[in-house]
Image (cartoon, rainbow, N blue to C red; front, side, top):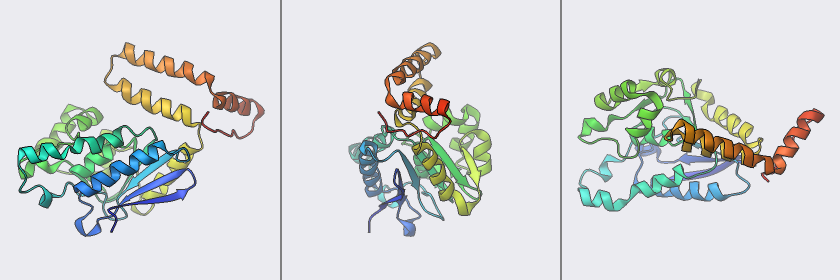
Length: 256
């Protein structure tokens, strides 16, 4: 059985579905490896303009697979090089929308935070409970969470291991939008489809500059923004978009 399924709900939107229902979609090495491979391939695919990541209707991902770690030592964990797998998601140039139902705990929360937009169902919950089994987050859970919600909210989650509801996550800035459980994937695909209809070069530059500028000085970040803004004036999509606006018609973008 494939641990990660690839679907194409629309021509320009790809959907990745974690497929370990019996293990509540726990992230083992095979899941991480398949996610890395798919994100790399989809990131290079010219016909894909946005990617939806989900775990299904009941659970997003309930954390790392503890059974696969219980007997591991430090050197074995180091040699797994799991950071290289996560890096494939981080490096994906296409917008990623996480559709979260149920648990997004531990590695599942870290995985969701690799997305650019998070759509959560009303009964979804987010947690970094690693401290409860004697370890700590190891795939960005301390750093991405801190950057997303600030020191005080992040450390409450990290030091207690307690989950937060979807609405709490939204209020603290961890979730983009909360919707009814039954329409989470539908809403994520809707947003992905909307993004896919926009000029791909502009979308790629916005994502790259926004993320690169987060940890830069304001002066440097503004310079990156300015250069990307100027670069887009060389694109045909810029001419098409502005001409369509003036002619009051729908633009036809091709990513050139």
